[in-house]
Image (cartoon, rainbow over all chains, first blue to last red; front, side, top):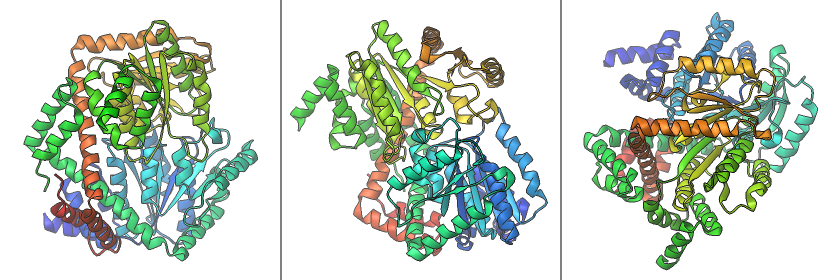
Amino acid sequence: MPVAVDQWVEQIRRSDVRALSRAITAIENGEPEAEAILQRIFPYTGQAYLIGVTGAPGTGKSSLVDRLAAHYRRQKQSVGILAVDPTSPFTGGAILGDRIRMQGHASDPGTFIRSMATRGFLGGLARATADAALVLDAAGKQVILIETVGVGQDEVEIARLADCTLVVLVPGLGDDIQNMKAGLMEIGDIFVLNKSDREGADRFEQQLRAMLELAPARDGWRPTVVRTVATEDRGTAELAEAIAHYRAHVEQSGRRRAMKIERWKQRLLDLLQARLLERLVGDHRSAQTLAALAEQVAERKKDPYTAVEEILAQADLR
Amino acid sequence: MPVAVDQWVEQIRRSDVRALSRAITAIENGEPEAEAILQRIFPYTGQAYLIGVTGAPGTGKSSLVDRLAAHYRRQKQSVGILAVDPTSPFTGGAILGDRIRMQGHASDPGTFIRSMATRGFLGGLARATADAALVLDAAGKQVILIETVGVGQDEVEIARLADCTLVVLVPGLGDDIQNMKAGLMEIGDIFVLNKSDREGADRFEQQLRAMLELAPARDGWRPTVVRTVATEDRGTAELAEAIAHYRAHVEQSGRRRAMKIERWKQRLLDLLQARLLERLVGDHRSAQTLAALAEQVAERKKDPYTAVEEILAQADLR
């Protein structure tokens, strides 16, 4: 269906909401058209600024993302929001919450919001999110906000995807600075202390700053701390300023190009792994070999290293 | 050094603490001896029962693991504990905490405790933990408790590794049942309501049970809920009983063998991906090709799909 794809690509470039939604659904479901679309829109991407927003549940990330989006809209920038949402298929809670939240922007054609649900786990979500961001990029969104609920592997992958990563923290949410996840400390370009009107915020900020000072600067950047109260829209402008500051720093340091190349190296490797796996599992003979070897390994008739060498010796991966 | 490896393997099988520690360090660092060791000990593995313990920070997982370990020790079972600890290299907080906690078991040679730190992220930690569990298994540990701090991808991988997965929850920890991570709900064989003397525990338990009833039973098992107060050792025996019950269920259902084979299939695929990646990045010509293509993709001269096909066409993966 080359004609349909042509039309679809054109609609995406015009930022047609239904075409964008359909494209992201196709990406999520791994539909064959998705790849054709991505390949076709790729030359038009690379213009958007991607902001990753991450933090534990209950930190108010969604409100913060809403405030930032509204801020950029007032500056006449077009905005895309991807809310990566690992909610259980049988609770539906967070997705519903998102839908309700979307109402606020629903009447603004300059803001596109989309929840990305967890499917299949195996790194598929990070890849799907990256691809969805490419779609919004090709649609001319100037700022893309990527919000994640997760605390772990996902964040690292999103940090790799975003041009700037915000880590959202809240004073006194049970997690002491000491207990903070390593990943979070290391991926943050800017730390947002949300709900900063709460008791203990000053002490928390002090601890955070002290810890950040111990960390080595990355490419001459020492993460900054911004206080916000998203529910009251306090600190939003300061946060946007901190993001602009970081962006300018990266531009001036001349590191931007190298960072982009490094990131694409990683994404190519991810894609490569996915491809190899598809071929290994997709090919009937390989799949049979794998099943037979797994059985032998489970029964301790063969060790896993020998088994893997046997698969590699048999498979045709080209 | 085949002689040294022989000796090392023998020491591992005698459950020599220093040999176990050295082997796990070798695994963590990806030292070449690690694979030789794993290959050699593999035939002696497959006897241990692996219990995964996961939940958000602050749920008291560590205390719970300690109580369970003590319980099994009283039943004269040998115990291994792997505390998977994604603590920041520059905070050191949780690792220090672990070390302090270890004191309790330090004088008991029947319990081996080890923290596994996050290195390199890319799924390496899950694989290293799985391999460390094999070492403890070969050393004759009958019960291996694997504790994770993470909330995300890591848990899914550990669920895949463990024979039984406990998800630890605490009433009123900011996370409503509605906000609970999907992954957690789906991997739990048993849900532990720790700190269950807190206010709101009854309501929380009700919500949890209601939600679990909505979930489809997996292989005829509907996850159970056990209340504990780990700090006071309350509920430990009930929890151990629930674990034994689950174990018996799986044995009786005849699904155990199929589950083990399925798990090994996944582990072989993981190992295979790692191998392929090693070869792609390790080979000088492939690495150069990758770098050059990443640059072209970053500059939008080539799309990522075409780039990946070019790498596959050039690489010799055998």
